[in-house]
View: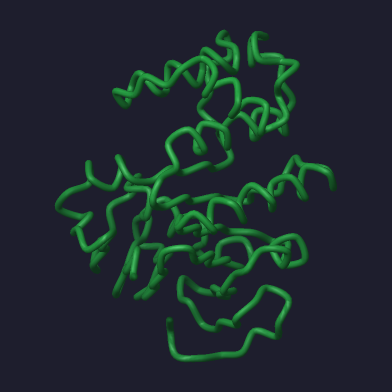
Length: 227
């Protein structure tokens, strides 16, 4: 089943065009990995998918719903994790997850929250303020928040940054499980080798367009019609 579909997306900052007619489709259980140089438009595309930016032109459907007309539906069914994790530094991991759940009207048990914290490797720090956490630990907690909601669509901008080799292996296991349970993942990365551990479709961006794709991040990327 098609989970996400965007057609003819255009966006720019002033006179600077950033996205020039992007078409992209992703199904349930599919990972699409976006590659390209800085300024190619990867982060801007993710921001549009996350409803942070509104495209100047184009269509965006999530589960068949017109996101440009019903943005609240998208925000209820997706999680975006970028360079800023938007955690509350004075709160512990348990408190961060509890507060995030409250905002969405959820009432998970302490046991359920603790299970998630253990899964992201922060069990020893469950009750410590997050303000003292390293960048990698903050990323783990943000991903724990995503696990709590299990969104239909997960958007990740450079998810492997600040992670060591063990952290990368852990993240790929977590994301593989998310995909196996029907989630749809769109991620932007500069590191094909790390993404290659995931079943994915690799797409290369340049000049605000999707110019090529392959069936896997470590396969040669060949120019095709825009996907």
